[in-house]
Image: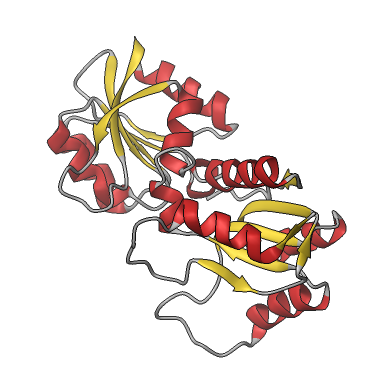
Length: 253
């Protein structure tokens, strides 16, 4: 068991070491009980994940997608009211990190995805970006587009949508950025990679891939961002002697 304050301080020291401009508050969003025995982590603080946290006896819910996004209504009504009410009723804290959990060099979504796909990181996707939000790297063994598709599907348990626009028979150099980062395909083209992996896809992405000669794999916003919260939860639990359980609420997007 550990104090909530100590957990938040450790998580903030890991995630917020460098200031990041974001679309939501990062850190403790909802305060629950002052003592924590068990952390449940997940991607999005949906009602389904909250209900699982309650059922599994969590004192703290750790997520990538929390609440209070810029541009949304500040009124606590509807599903937001129900979600927050459930957390408060069961004295469960909500700890959320958005961009900090994408860019962290060890625990971040992009680093964790690389580890699962066997990608070696060579450098940033955009060398001028601060912070870096994606990577360029390579496969130890070149793959065909079907081989890369099978690799992603097998590791993420999700068959990606593939736009086979590449001109190279074998894929060696790869760029990636988790979540809704299809707009960074231009950066991948500029980096001269054979394929780009992200979470989502938009109508213009298809044309860019085809016309610029690059393979594009949309592997799922949720599927590509499962691993940051999981890694952070595991680290906090290990360092502070807590229970931790990652709960994957299926999301096809």
